[in-house]
Image (cartoon, rainbow, N blue to C red; front, side, top):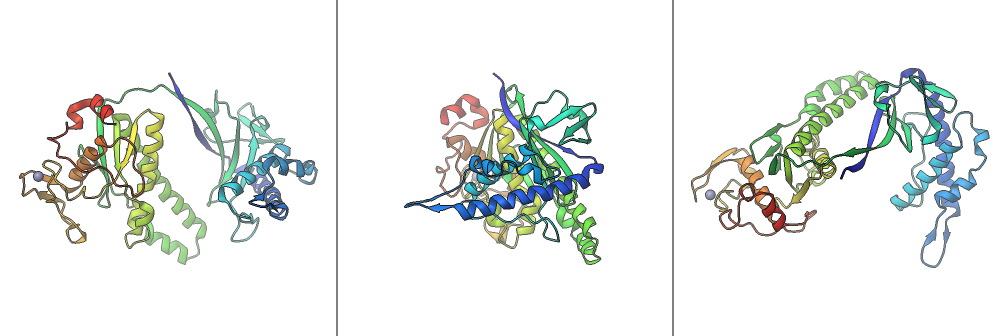
Length: 384
Ligand SMILES: [Zn+2]
């Protein structure tokens, strides 16, 4: 049985089309802002709740609008209407932000379309009577899409984004289970001792960024920001891919990057990319048929993974302690590996994924339960 999921292809558009796309984005903004206005103005208050224009209503209101626009066609207008209605409903607000076409606070360009309006034409693509060429054209061979969009990034480059269906044969991973400790010294440490070094991309480039900004080289600064983001994503992609390919059951701590991002450690937390890494593990794990669990990581640093006594270093004072010896059983531990092992032990006993602040079941010494590595996948499934 092959699983299928949606994967978004992102292909860079060749720069000769940028002027046309920039002009089309202005027209998109006009349609979007019209939807924003009319939707708010016509919202009627009934007894209990407001009734809003649906995407379908907006489509019929904009019928025939194509003739006022030079570039975008009816399919793009319809997609804008539908997307607007969905976005407004999801945001649960009276109005969404106005899309600005000019000036410093300009919205990033966006140009949605339906599948039928983008066609292959030799080595290029045909859209709205214009020929587009993209980099890495070969990735589009044999691929079908239903809809997609052109999107602009902060640097000003345009990308063709196409959600395509990918099928993947599920395969069983070679190893049973792993616990992953997310940290600041090393971005991630597994219970088998594998490490992803802390990603210092932003902090290393901060000096250069500041210089560029002071000198007014804003475009270069934006490029550098994009480069930092891509390097971080690349490192997270590689690490999560290797984890998902190797292990069947994956357990991660519930450390919240959003909460820590409000503290003094914010830069470090955001630069290590915990949030990205966790999300990648979740969706890659789901596609590959792995079980990814998020467990409460309370006491995982202090607890000895061998005997279960709370003998390890605790608190901010002992943050520098990397190695310690358990006074109860004499086992010597690496701080992060020990923490990852504890997470694995907790994760192998609680069945459902725990999110937020729910408490996970109490720790039990490995002697009372079978060690997940020894017990194998059947025990893990029975525990689940
Ligand atoms: Zn111990």
